[in-house]
Length: 188
Image (cartoon, rainbow, N blue to C red; front, side, top):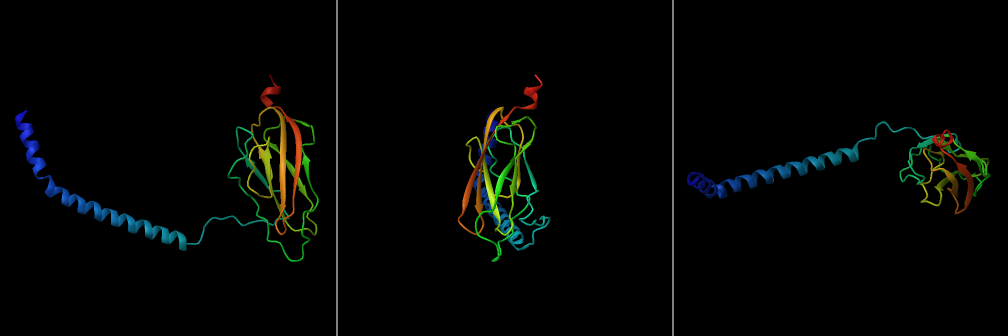
């Protein structure tokens, strides 16, 4: 045991000399890592993005977004499949005719997913975007897609749609109540 302690004491006495070499090595590696991170960030900032899908016209309201969720809480990072075009000077400011086509008010629905069909007759009006909420939960990000939901809880569902114009401060809110029963609940 004494031999082990003596060996340990000799090793620890030589440690201050080794420590300075280790400190120098760690400092060098830290500098190299910092340079690597800076070069990579510079490359990322100056490279052109790859694999970005081209955007569609705002007049196309047939795009679908499938949102997988286990509850009725809207997601915070909703995928936008079509981007609205910037309004032109010739469009009429305000919000054109918009409606929730399906499900109908008070309708019993059991399909999974349930997609909310929104109809916007743009005509001469400028583009709009909308945000939605299920059962008074927080609103989604603004987009112009058809929202779809998986696994909504059974019972009364209140769907709120906030619509805003891209060129004016005009907004409107639509509400639709329907009853949802999951497919598994109807087969029991």
